[in-house]
Length: 313
Image 1 (cartoon, one colour):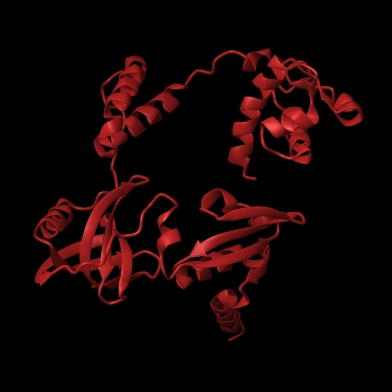
Image 2 (image 1 turned 45 degrees about the horizontal axis):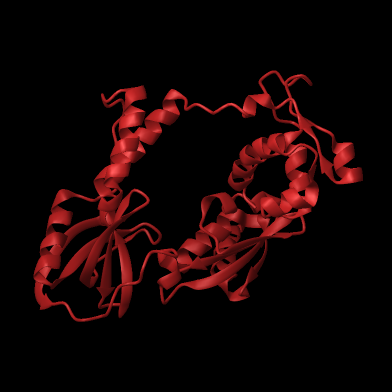
């Protein structure tokens, strides 16, 4: 359970409890699809929430004795959350920027709805640009060369700066498509060096050299619906058991599952690059209590021992 998910649930929980006074704990837990134990933890958080000032009259009131003894939830002093929330200027501007990006790169079927929402936001913040937006779409020359190669159906040689390995490579690939995800443009291509599908971020492609070699039929590239790592043939599942100090990764990385493990968590993620995993494990340090499979941590252990040996020297 991440803090972002809990905050979202709490914002919905208060209006629900206002509309259902003296609600049953188990019933509310079923409505919000959490355990009664998690709901009790949520109520303990709400107890310390309220208006600025922090005095008893400013905070949400919950009869915790009734919760624990009778299984009933009685909430009061939270009328301010029954009123519609308003965007701050910064929030409205951020939403307008996101809508402009979606209008440019999003599905054409959504264009009318996006344009309508953008018009409503701009009626509040104004249409004059207040911030600059730079999407990770790569250089114009790179996009033009890839578009030409896709149209002609020929392979290309890339000059690619990989972020995880910190090295420049020159893969020969059969380009299949260019797609936008999370603010970045990506090239899906069949790598002749690896004999498998690979994904390249356009803003890390330095140059594209077309060839006369026609692309082969490799079938459809992997879909993105469940996360592109799910379809990587070289991606392996790694489970990390973490102390409380390592819980932060549940907020930063896409995970397949997260479950409690004592005071910490057990997080399962897909890893396609062992160098990236090594860096993550070294960054987590003593917060890593166990790694499954154990051999996934071998590289990090060797790097840590080498660093310690350097200090001894």
